[in-house]
Length: 322
Image 1 (cartoon, one colour):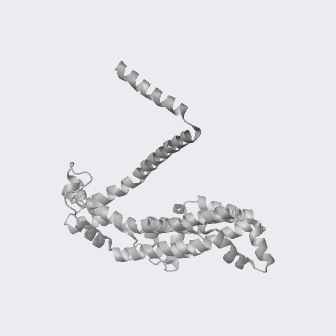
Image 2 (cartoon, one colour):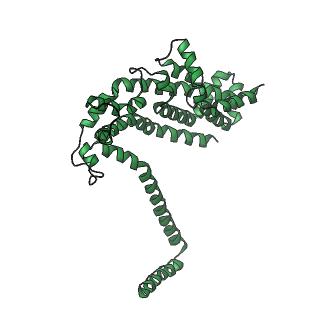
């Protein structure tokens, strides 16, 4: 053991001496290679942590319940059970639930991207009386949890007979509210404040009014903020499992998230089980549940992947302006 340690120390010492005798360019190249190796190691580790849940959902969704209950089958199923996706499609009533999720998510994202931009532009570029008070109110809207106001807002929509419609989700987004609306307004405010004053001053000298400056000058300069708000709003509304099912509780109006919660109950009843399902009965429908998770997750992944390039180009454009 002592000889092995001594040989290891001698080996390391020889390479240290060789490194000391190298020139500046050779040392710089070695440091660059070592830095790259460490960087890729960290990136691979992080990618593994983020991809592991998705890989687990993907592989489990293709298993039969026999493979799922078999402890010897961990990642690769013995046979691909594509029926899980068919059952999940039927159990979710996927076309209708997908349409409901798409209308509420895409509509809210588009409306918040515009309305919150107007709010952020006013707070970030103008000076007027009461601006501090409005800013405090925006902060309060951000801090107050929606659970404290859900009963009153539900009463308002019920009074106007607008429950089980898209209006309780889309109308607040139209006025800069909705999920995280105050946060999006603050994001826009931050980006508008970073744009040099010379940009809108030059436009005003040329005769442009506030709306023209906002549309033609400011919005193109904050494309990164628009991408951030749109992607975040879409994802948060798509994953919403509180407000949407509260206002849209009819089976034909439910979005994918609440439908996903009830998919096991749906198939337990279809298989003839009554009452609370046992662990074995739940395990039989577990792979189908993961297939439903994958069907629900895919649109969000597509939106994120499609918006990444616009997000990066917007940040790069902002850096050039500054």
